[in-house]
Length: 202
Image (cartoon, rainbow, N blue to C red; front, side, top):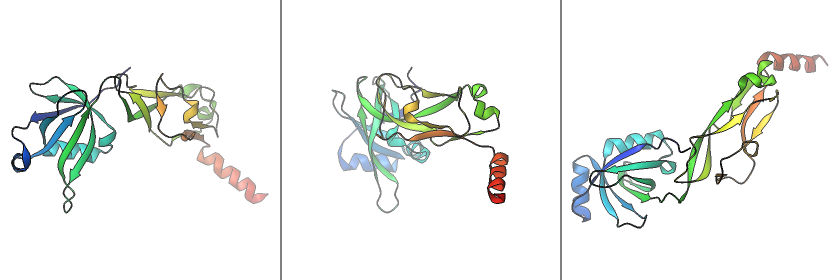
């Protein structure tokens, strides 16, 4: 059931203090630390370009990573903070927290749609409008769903699909309390314009 967790590579940072951190930055790394999970904190270096690319993709703080450090067992981590240069807004330090398999964490999970061919609204030319292609859910680190599924069977034009209409895996809950919209089936543009003409003539 668990989704594909991206690997994140780091190296052990030898030495401590500001001197070692400055040396890491000169060599193209961002210093960081891994803590929690019942183990001692581990000082690491992350390749600057790797971190920057991840940050540009967005939702870095909501992504679970499989941290790979040579000489250490792989561990699941989530970023708990990125310090940035106040002038250039570029990363200068990164904090990761180890997660136990039982840890609860908020992550964005992909929404998939099935049975398009069984939706009368789509057969009539309606359009599936996806409002949220991903939804933020609270999940257990050891059992992360790859996606949640919306069944479009019997869906008509005008139907609105809310988060409470979607069956979620056991133990998975939305982070937002209200029943927000995930998708809807809107009328085809031709039908909409005809309706508008009818209203104009009336």
